[in-house]
Image (cartoon, rainbow, N blue to C red; front, side, top):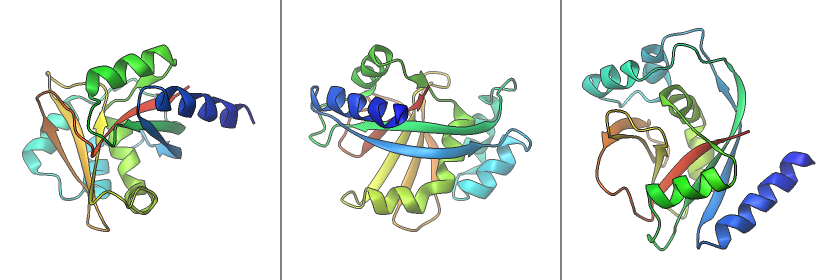
Length: 165
């Protein structure tokens, strides 16, 4: 019940700034295997060069477990990373890291069908790596690809992902 109220409060807060949110529930973040192995399993279309960069961003001190995540987007394209980050800070959400994003990719089919009004869904990690943003691209039932992007990071297909505490 407490989680439902928190989500409803977050939804109201997002709507007040012209955004919508999506709840990604019970994602198992597995720390028992290497991040490289997780990428191969959950985002197999990821280029080897990107895999190497992503693995360097792995937090060795993570604790594994099941986490809930909130993805926020602006369907009108008038949002962006900075706006998402400010909203998350105001609402007590945590930035996600590379292992979180790769773990979320395991639910790509569910995410795509829940958000099927988008042709392509891009989930963006909210903890930049060397000034670039890890982005997981989900297209229908195709395998996921993760890559790094830079720039102003705004668009109607970007979902900025934060961990719900």
